Amino acid sequence: MRILRNENGQATVFVALFMGLAMLGFLAVALDVGYLFREKRMAQAAADAAAIAAAEEDSYGGDSGNAQAAANAVAKENGFDTTLSSYPATVSITSPSTGTYSTGGSSAQPSAWVQATVSRPIPTFFLSPFNHNFGTVTVSATAVAGGGLSSPTCICLEGASGQTLNMSNNAKISASSCGITVDSSSSNAVGVVGSANICSESIGSVGTWDNSNNVNNGGSVCSTTKVVQGISTTCAPAMPAVPTYSSCSNDPFSSINGGGVKYTVGPNSSYGTTTGGNTICYKGLTVNGNGDTTTLNPGIYVINGGELHFESGTNGGGQGVMFFLTNGASLVIDNGANVNLVAGGNTESGGGTAPSTGIYNGILIYEDPGGSPSTDTGDSATVSVQGGSSAYFSGAIYAPLAPVTLGNGSSSTVNADIVAQSLTMNGGGTLTSTASSNLGTLNISVAKLTQ
Image (cartoon, rainbow, N blue to C red; front, side):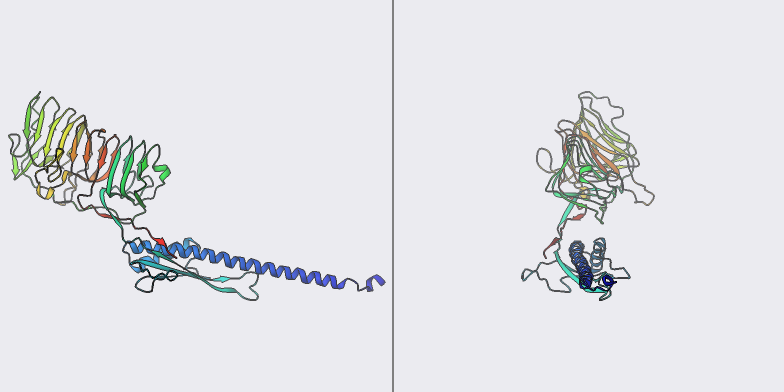
C-alpha cells in the first residue's frame, strides 16, 4: 500500500508524455513545411515549362489564347492543374502587350517574351486543426521566344503515315540553306541508316521519333541541323497549272533499233507533232542506250499514259526541258544512264543557263497532281532516278501523289527540290537542294528561359 501511495517519479511520466507530444508536433511541422518547399520547387518547374511553351507558341505567331492553352497544358503535366475543383492552380501569362519585361534590372527588351506565373493554395496535413493551408505559393518564370526564325523548305514529303524519308547505303542530302518537312505522323517517319547522312538547315516532322532508333547503323544527321518534331503545320505547296496539249504521238523510238546514231527529238523535231508553242506530247518515250546519242530539244514534254524511260547506256539529254507525266505515266532512269537533264532557267553542267520554259522554269519532272479538271485523280506512279557515272540532273521534281526513289551513283549530280509522298535514297550519291521555289517554311525558333 505504501508503494501505491508513493508519488515519486510522477513528474518524469508527465515530462515524457509532454516531450513525446512536442516531438510529434515538431515532426508534423517539419513534414508540412517540407511539403511546402516541395510544392514551391514543383511550382517553379511548372512555371519554367509554361513560360517556354507559351514563348514557343508566340514564336509560331499564335494568338494569346494559344499561348495560354499551351502554358496550362504543360503546367498540368508538372502537377499544377487549373481545372481541379479542390486547390486548383492558376497560370497567368504576361507578354509585351500586357506587361513590362524585367530580368533582375536588365534594360534589354526583346521583341518577343512571355512571363508565366503559377500559383496554388498549399494545404496542410498535420497542422490542419490549426490552419487548413499555408497560403498560396506563387512563382514566375520568363522566357524569350526564338525570334521567329524559320527555314525554307526544299524537300516536302506529303505522305501522312509511314517512313516517308528513307536514307541508306551512303546516300547524302546536302541542303545548307533550306530544310526538309515530313508530314508523316509515324514514329518511324525518318530513317537514316547504313552510313547515310543528312546535312540540312532543318528537319521538321509531324511525328516524334527517337534519334537512337531512327538514325543508326552508321547513319547520321549533322549537328548543325535543327530537328523540330511534332510540328502542326504540314507542307502542301500549291502546284502550277498543268500544261495544255492536244494530240499525242507514239513513242518515236518504238521502231528504232539504232546503233551509233544521233537523234534529235521533241518540239520542232521530225519525231512527233508539236501541240502548241514549245509543247509536245508522246504516249511514251524510251531513250535507248544502243550506242545512240539523243538530244532532247528545249521545251515541255507531256508523257501521256506510257513510260518515260532512259535506258542503261543512254547518252545525251536536254537543256531547258520539263517532263509532265499524266494518265498513269511513270519515269524510270536506269542505273548506267548517262543523261544530262536541265530544267528551264537552271544552270547547265558546263556553265550557262538552260533555255526558259516559262512558268515551268526550274521544274524538271512534274507528275500530274490531279484536281484540274475535277475528274483528274492525278498520277501516283513511282519516279525512279538511278543515273550513271556522268549523269547530271538539275531541276525540281514535283510528284505530290507519288514516291520518289533516287539511287544514283557517287559520280552522279542531282540538284533538285522535291515534292513527293516519300523520298527513298539508297545509293552513294548526293542530293543537293537549294530552296529555289516556295515549298513553305518551317519555324525553327527555340524559346529560352531568362529568369
